[in-house]
Amino acid sequence: MDWLDQVRWDADGLVPVIAQEASSGDVLMFAWMDREALAKTAELGRAVYFSRSRRRLWPKGEESGHVQQVHEIRLDCDNDVVLLKVTQHGHDPSIACHTGRHSCFFQLYRDGEWRTVEPVLKDPADIYK
Image 1 (cartoon, rainbow, N blue to C red):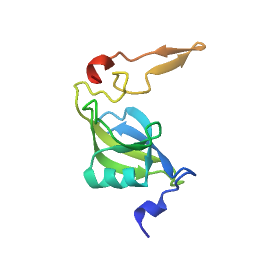
Image 2: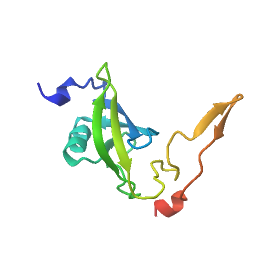
Image 3: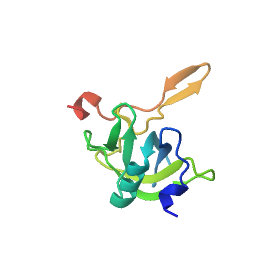
Image 4: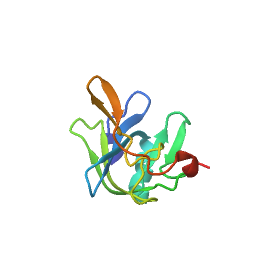
């Protein structure tokens, strides 16, 4: 059986993907992959996602230069979520979020409201020209 056939794809042929920084354990982002994106990620050792808004493959960092080198690809116990252990390249400290932050998970719920708890490391206007 093909390893890709073991993934439980949703009705749209997608699987959710979590990118985790290998060195720190930080959860950097959440995205989607289709079969082609997962195959390319394994082949290239670099994260390639599927953009639902653009309806096409999205090599992470194609515009920003913030690419993700993939060290491990893991599948959860139900075979329906992929975890990538990555090194985020392109900026020091690393930026994974299109907002210019290290992680897309920069909002913390506390006392009945969402609070921004991570700084912008680079203005998105300077990233996406």
